[in-house]
Image (cartoon, rainbow, N blue to C red; front, side, top):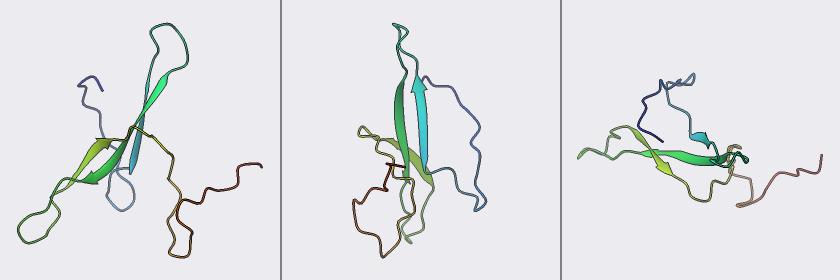
Length: 82
């Protein structure tokens, strides 16, 4: 991220998106590198109230945008064979 400030679109619940994917162009003209940032809590007050959100860099950049249901197995990926 180069320091620019961009408007954040809020979802229907008023929260920012859980994941931001930022394509960074390659200097040699190859495919862009995609940086992934995940939304994490900024912190909590003394009363335990959440202060807000911030984005933390996710070096693995795994796509886990699917819902996490209580009956789902951990680490199970959806079938992508089509």
